[in-house]
Length: 165
Image 1 (tube, helix red, strand yellow):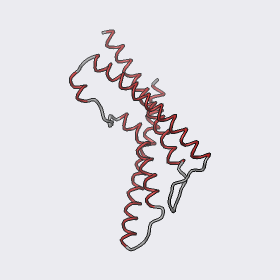
Image 2 (cartoon, rainbow, N blue to C red):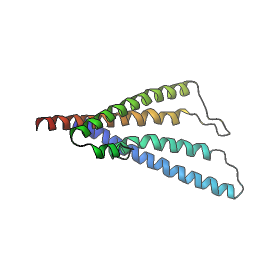
Image 3 (cartoon, rainbow, N blue to C red):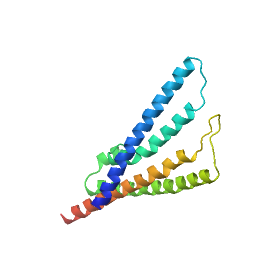
Image 4 (spheres, rainbow, N blue to C red):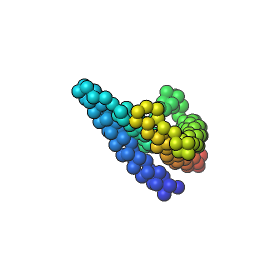
C-alpha cells in the first residue's frame, strides 16, 4: 500500500503544479483582457480560455487539497467526539467521498467521450472543443478517489491498531 500511496502523492504533486500554472494563466489572461478592453480592443478567446483554465485548476488540485486537509471538513463534529468514534466518522466520510468521486469520474469520462465523439464546441466566436475542459473532471476525480482510498486504508490500520491496545 505504501507504493500506491507514494504514486498517488507524487501524481497529486504533479497535478497541483499544473493546476497552479492553469490558475496563473487564467489570471494573466483576465488581466490582458481588461487591459486590451481599456485600449478599446475586442475579446475573442480570452474569457473562454480563462474559464477552461480555472475549471482545470479546480479539478486537478482536488487530490492535493484532500491529502493536505484543505477540503471542508466536519470539524465541529470531530471536536465533540474522540477516540475510535472520530476514526469511524472519518471512515464513513471517506467512503462517502470515495463514492462521490467514483461517480464524478464515471460521469466525467462519459461527458468527455460524448463531447469528443460529437465534436461539441463552446458557443461564441472562439468556439473551442469542450472535451479538454471535461477531461479534467475524470482525471482529477479519479486521483481524488485514489487519495480517499489511501485515507481509508490509513484509518482502517489505525482502527485495527487501537483495537489491539
